[in-house]
Image (cartoon, rainbow, N blue to C red; front, side, top):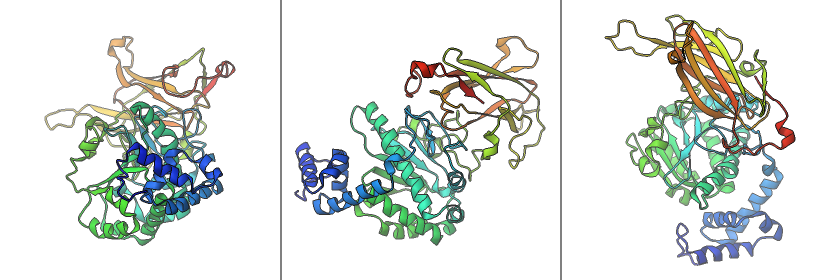
Length: 457
């Protein structure tokens, strides 16, 4: 294949010829396993050098077989596996955060507590999935203590498989063309010189980048590193030495002025902290939940176990409402060391906060923040709506919509919502219903499955 081919804009005949030449170098077994897109990605990664690409793809194939990668528990519409990280704005899985579900092991939860927060957050202007990582909030010194290099790589593989098997097919369907790459935004806000020079963590990063380039080539369309402080330049000189020149060409280093993100990602799909207009206020943690940043409550596994309230819903009796009285909480904030107070069932008070703290306000109205946590043992998902009504009022006109209807998939892992209700005596009414068949992408149950009750707790 001629070296003059523009691998980013090949003609159909050039692409077909490159794929055919590489397939001629592979065994029938490897050829039958690989799609044309797989062949093309590895060809591009080696600049259409078929000999080098063949070595690379054979090693990739052997790794996948030996590591049983195809058997990983990846969240997809037709299963109940938990998501590997936060997700916002996709249909294949409902919006979710990582919580202590049955399919989430303790090692992943410990790692999540040290990472600054990562989320697949909607799409760019061309329909590619966008992954945002708040790397500046990583607790760098704790990552090597919390996870081994192999454990971190296993977690990263799960993220890549979720991208490949779940998000990219959905994006391709919506775009009506093959979408096979993602856009990555790495936010370095808050990073320190100490973090950028932590050798054990840098060694883990180096190994992960090496594996990523060998095992998932050409999955990245572009990476934007934003809020990069001046001290990052020193670290970048070292990091770029670990990267293939083609990968380097796709990375843009930006400072605090990163308005060009809006050229790639529309404002309504870009978090407000990155210059967009999205806030994802319906989810705890907003657009990108972060335990180190403190915008997302880190509840232990015990907080989701043996909840006092348990009911059954079904496709024939799809609704359930739970009513609980709320009383004003104190004027001081509830310590985050004991985030759940007041209730031992589905609900728990977290803290109170001023809704209007303007100096001219004689008595600021305060709100109480309430956790709602729930899970199901099966099903296509549930839709949740929450109302608040003053105590003693029988008029619906006095009610306040605290949380509008939203679809969740608590069959994958427990759901944790954080609500803001008036800090007055009243009633919270939580309404659950089984998702309709036109909500979400989970497959319809077979007739015999539809008769099995769904445990909501």
